[in-house]
Amino acid sequence: MVRRLLTPRWLLLHAVAVLAMLVCFRLGWWQWDRSQEAGGTFQNLGYALQWPLFGLFVPFMYWRMYKLDQERAAAEDAQQAEAAVPAVPEQPVSQDPPRRSPTEWRRAAAVEQPEDKALAEYNSYLAQLNAKD
Image (spheres, rainbow, N blue to C red):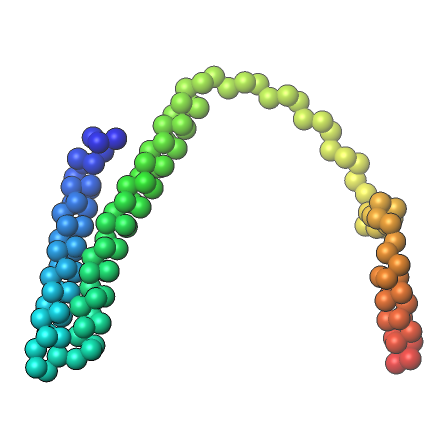
């Protein structure tokens, strides 16, 4: 796996990650200096605390990309291994169940499900309300 980290894509990601971290920490330091000046505000102090957090987000995303790349490589290796194994002939599939009309499906569903007393009372109540209208 270390060999994959030396590909041109990953070398570029190494450089971008280090550069992004350095820029974020430098901006945090700059905001800290600004907050300590006579014209500094609490906003500068807030940014001085925010920029290092952004800088710490970079290694997290770098680690996440590394893990996703490992998972992708493992999946590719599994696919290649699966392709190399001769396929086992499948068992014949049984025939499809007989086709039913919608009425037959409703009857079968009604037989399979016991009637709920509360649902039956509610349906009769709705029928009475419908009859009044």
